[in-house]
Length: 202
Image 1 (cartoon, rainbow, N blue to C red):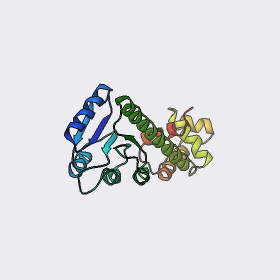
Image 2 (image 1 turned 120 degrees about the vertical axis):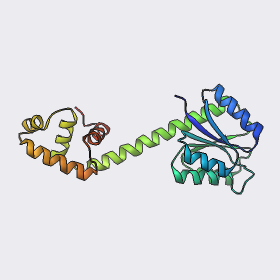
Image 3 (image 1 turned 90 degrees about the vertical axis):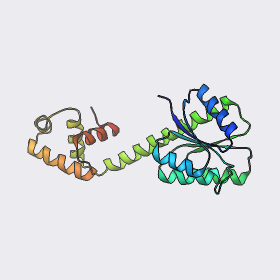
Image 4 (image 1 turned 30 degrees about the vertical axis):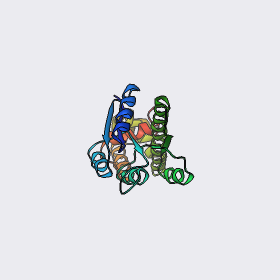
């Protein structure tokens, strides 16, 4: 499935041309909007993989401020389009993380590469953030709890885990409850996903 892009551009002809070029380069799902109000409404109603916005909008706020407001709703990688490489503008745009920008006029291939890099960098950041959170949560567990989590996440029953660790299955169940409480999880499925993320599956 192709990535879904929110395109914010208030010049109709330019927006149409960009959408056509994106389609030629594999980005077929593009939703165009021309005003901040329209962009906010579309952003709230849809899940986008990337925001592609002109900085110089003829509106009460520019593209940088608009994207900053959208990012408060949820984080999405952003690529800015601008005809100016003003250091002040770049400095403001850099506060939007992750971000990239393309100077007008640009080649379609340049835009494609920048979008793919923005998507890739965002995914990498998300994975790193998820990994850090997982490792931080893992430190909440005792060594015995880690052993039990690893064992039952590998498909073993409480009795099998107990036999392997030389404890009763009642003790295993007690540990499971403690693990759920410490990790703030309520289902076995959540615990198994956590174990996978933490590389505990044998």
